[in-house]
Length: 160
Image 1 (cartoon, rainbow, N blue to C red):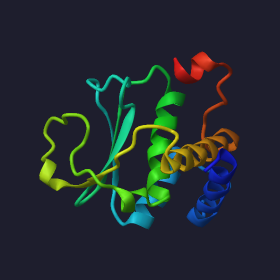
Image 2: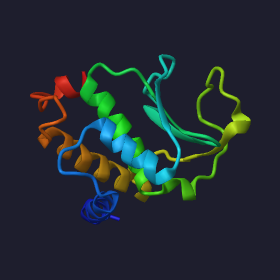
Image 3: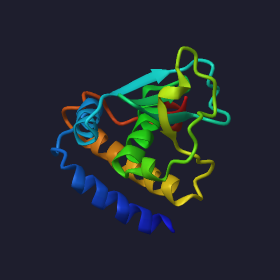
Image 4: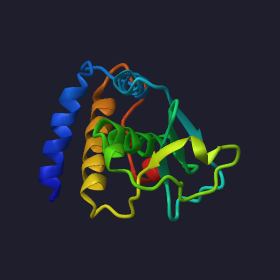
């Protein structure tokens, strides 16, 4: 799959989500929670370095859990979350294979984990489409007057 095809899939998924024209990260989260019928918890894990895994999504019995590495900017954090949201929107948990997360998570009973995604590169179609949808959602956030934030001005503002 090429990026053009991924963008087409992302556009279709975005339309199916039926978000209002003005969005916030929280309104996107609430729309996904409603469609998946369970809450989403987002946790920063300081032990996660971002070298191998920047963020991951665990499907638990009673919630979706997004875990992300510490970031130097709120823009980078937002994009990591949007990428994991995009996997949810695109129903990539249907293809999930691994019940064990690639990192040790203190206090989490692994028997509660229904699935994690086994992904390793952006050459994978699921990763490419999730990134395309995350980019699309980020653009909507930037242009939304209700988001309360302004577009970053430089690479360092986004990625620290």
